[in-house]
Figure 1 (cartoon, rainbow, N blue to C red):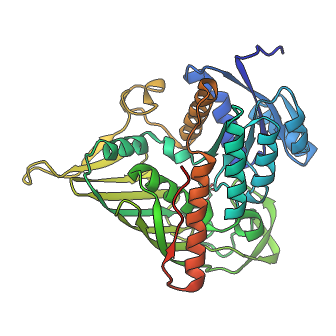
Figure 2 (tube, rainbow, N blue to C red):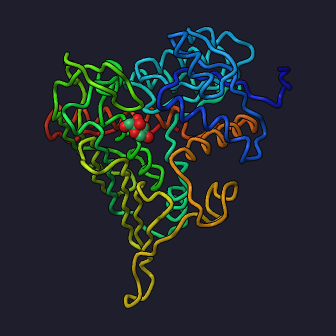
Figure 3 (cartoon, rainbow, N blue to C red):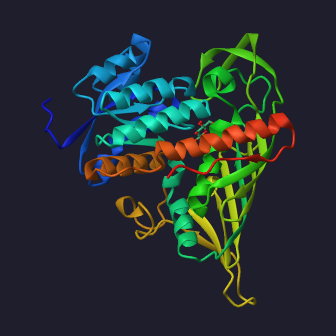
Length: 396
Ligand code: SOE
């Protein structure tokens, strides 16, 4: 197929497991529902095993395959590299891609350490001077109800923000028989529930309130220290065998946080909340109003307007499916809700638009670095047992 210069965006995706599948559907779907300034092409899928990557490419709709990610960076038909690998390879791939002049989308958390995230943010800033763009995949920012929450705060409808309550609750490893996976290995994932899901609520609360976390006091816990090694892998988890391996990350993270704008926060991230599957729960109280969100009812935002007469005031259940809500006009008539995958599609829309308009997309690698610093402060505070741990101010 001949590419139309300036009109298409050749994408190279590295990794094809859970996140790779979610990103693939987003690259495929975005141009069918949104009027994009560039048309993404699913040019190449990379993975180490030829048979497995060939099978994944056929299933997910990719035109070709590579078994070495470096080859993807050398290809002239690739304009953007999408990094969906475990965290231990993010820095190496993303920096090399930026240096090769490829735009980069990188899964969260940005890296496995602050040093790696700093190097990535530096590489991104340098690349941006050459018009090469980068974004970190905090996809939940693109849930319409989250967009509305941020808008309400920005419009002053909550007044001065005082309390932030944020939980990310899952239960996919609550069973001690659930097998080991890369998400349970520090070398590969950097941290456990903290980086995998805690990173999302750190990003979301900073995004909604417009305030950065300035300090934390934290506790981490690993409830199950040995698990069966997998005989089969799945999107999350898989099937365990007789041999066991050691869990080297946290199963749960709990911390207090102070925001730069004066709000105080309580955070909890766990994969041991039996019955909670993907419950991202955020409640914010301000001087003029409150809001509450739960991803398990993701098309709804609860809003309390403190200016209403006490006799009839109450939390209003806003169904966030109106065409005026963020992203919704491109989809279905009011009331016909969106799902998990739509956040990834919206991420593609915003990234492609920024690339075409030659602007910096958000969340940037600098935003990813800020979250990494919070994760690092949480780990240091938990290790020190109860030390208040300051977080450096975000980069401009
Ligand atoms: C697993 O906990 C996981 O897939 C995370 O890695 C994702 O970031 C989150 O969106 C859903 O849960």
